[in-house]
Image (cartoon, rainbow, N blue to C red; front, side, top):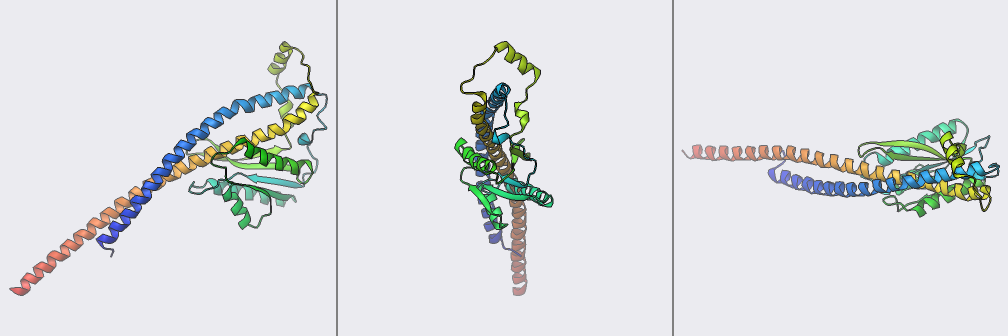
Length: 296
């Protein structure tokens, strides 16, 4: 049976651990608020970008020559891009992304397709390396606070592989932020860009008619060719922000649960320590009584 001193050492150790988990919870909560603010600031830009592309697309006579819109009849190679974090201690945040990515890989292989990978985040990269997957690129060190330049680098590499014909489809796998308690794993096709982005409803067409005709310089097709890569970058940046918010929410929840479990463990150890102390006192009393009886 453990002694009182053993229990005291364990209680001190768990107490120190709880201090760390509480501090990490507070830090994650602060980072989560910043990530949510960045997502909210990003949404108007993304919506305006979509409206701009739709408006230019309506003015274009043909979009068949734009490689990022090319829907290939035979999809033979798929590029998977799982977005994970650089650090752990975030519950199932990283594991559920890699699980979904490997499940998607199995289904694609069953269909006879080839799968290639881009690694984003140290956790995802290490998991892919451990599984002996060959990477066409790896991007780490920014998942806590991604910048637009990080999304540009990933989008440029994915677009390069798609335009050169090395891959026929690009799929993002990441956590969409729902709340601090809930993160939903999402699969999003980013390339080829869906033709739905060029479609508009009757209200938008009526608004265009009221604004009158536009004169485009250069031609709408050239403008669209410049806007579509930016649209892909925007989609990737939005996914990175969603992933960051999800990571901080998952870490905050995990650290809160860890602090709660540490408190319960401290209560259990304290109770056991009191029982051990009581047993020691009882044993000392019995020894004193026994010694007194032996002297009489």
